[in-house]
Length: 546
Figure 1 (cartoon, rainbow, N blue to C red):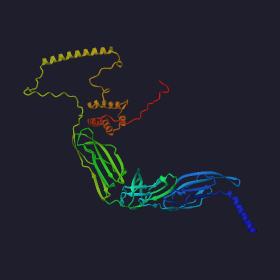
Figure 2 (cartoon, rainbow, N blue to C red):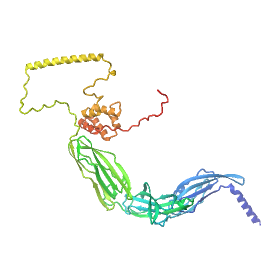
Figure 3 (cartoon, one colour):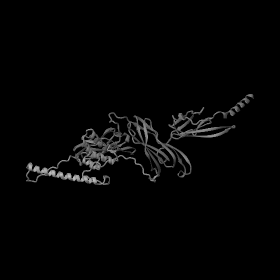
Figure 4 (cartoon, rainbow, N blue to C red):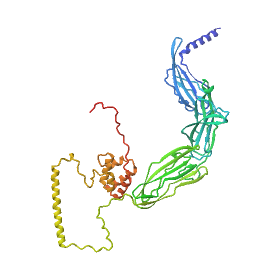
């Protein structure tokens, strides 16, 4: 009897003391989920903690949204604050997952267990409401070969929400390419909505490779058109794909470029060019089964007797027939330095045929360009015009030397002409002193335009270096004739190179005639300047009018 009384007193003492101890517990909203779904971990505590360290969970789970809510309770006349922390957990692999104890203030939570089921593999067919397909464009790819992966989600019932995923396999990189494509298809007399998503898989080492099947975790609406408020979870997956990755063959061309196909062609191929003038060569390369990052540079070898300027390549990436396809276009400016025959070697790219398992070479034939004298010849010093040819039967003997009297008469005439010219110059000077200031008059036009008024086209035609620089500075809006500032303002690399050659000719002892040829060729269509930011004109009246 006394023992029973003592036990009852102990139980009453423990129950009375419970509110005095901190209470911390953890639980899951579900004990079993399908792979790809998210479960909520909840932790309730009456300890004063601002947050919980979820670091131990990152080894097995991807963490989702985190939240906390606090409430006040009154127990046996004493108040306390209860905090409930929640975090979303998404398992990284199917199987039995364990949630380790987490530290919460001075307490720790108890370990938990979670069963992660494999998603149901729903075969494609009209009997399935929802199914997922995964296709690869090569079952036996080579190392570092770009493999196109296409995932298709097919659903014949309304989907309220969902998440479509494809896990990356070990020893390979996987990235999403482009945007989703949506369309409809008929299968067994049943209409399906299709969401197609594309990926790029690049194996990193040889051997067997397992690509997990794409999976969908979502919620489907029930009833007519899914609008009666009912919701049903949906979890389906596609079968896994098993690939055999082949090693790089011995003796394969380097750099290693495995493709399904590679073609080269000329978009512009000149057969004739002018000395000192630029001719355009445009080349296109289309690689079936490669990304832009895998494409080698599209170049042309140096051409003896000419300068070659390459513009930046234009790249276009597409996804065709389930795999990437890259188109590269590049333009080259060929500036011959002298007339004659010119041979331009075509580009050459070595690659590996992944379908035939053989080395290939894509190349273009060389271009044979006939260079003729330029249409803008260099300015030559003024010389006396050649004598007109004598008519047939005319006397071709040299003229006799002038006699002393004739020489004397010539000197008398020259002195008289000199006196007349001097008188005219004196009269002009007197009139100029009596005329208004130059600022009030328009001035008279000279026969040869000075540097200050000569246009860039005229300066290039005459070959006056100072006038050329001044015309460029005026066109660029610069106050001083500065070659360095002009080069920095030019947007065309060919024109900048022509200015560099002019600078070398003026100050470094370079070939001035060749520099003038390059200037005429580069600036034939005018200068191309970089775009500069201009101050925007306000649409409001000034606050303080002038």
